[in-house]
Image (cartoon, rainbow, N blue to C red; front, side, top):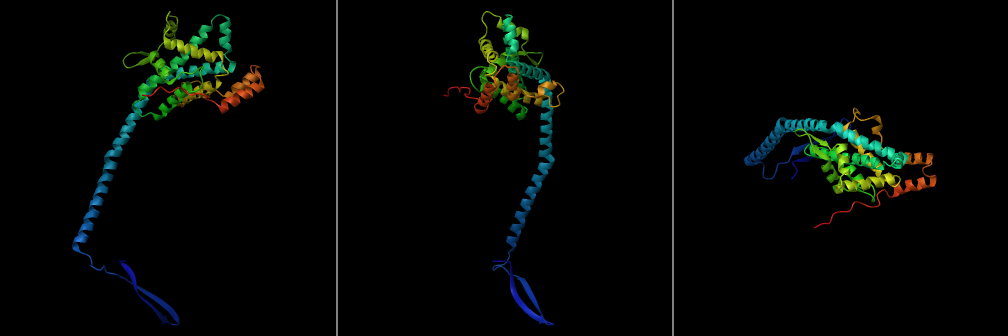
Length: 307
């Protein structure tokens, strides 16, 4: 039953004007209020108020300060761990960026030049080292910062992994191959420090009578890039984009990385340079760019068998 209702309606005439009066009265419930009912309502209201008051006090005086303190401690420790590896990681990523840029802009002219001099292995091995060193610092970053809630860095590392592993055979390095190469390139330093295998030690491995399997495979992939840079342009562009994103994350204010390591390789700009240098005809350039746009990854990395 409604608690309020209009119980009386009048219309009076005063001085030629009609005055309407409405009187509202409170309708009483049929059975009326009881003392136990009032007490129960007050008790429930008191319990609710106590709960919300205690929860609010806990939120503002205990949980929130502790959460903010934990987040700040995470951020400080995260930056401390990153400081150990920032400079060598930036060097590794920027050096590979510059090598890929030169290879694509000139269609591996430096490689063909030293190959004519009988020193083609130099360019293959040095490029293989730059790629392997990137995999090493990728693995180091994952290990160092795995427990510090660095989702933004993780996504950038994953993007580089996908750029190398997806696509067609050639300069394709599968996901677990990247992990293996990275692990084998890591050497222990002083204390908890880690470093990457030096170039001289890397070359010594390549000059052994029995070259390790992972090095032979990497050499083949790099040779495919140097022999057919035009066919690998799409993959190289995706790899380089991931490198530039990592560099921007590690050094957002460009305190360590060179100015040139801020812009990723542009496929249209590279192809236009080929056409201008008579390395590629215009019609072939249009077909190449169209193929890259329509089908950047015609095949994916094979999935391991299940079960």
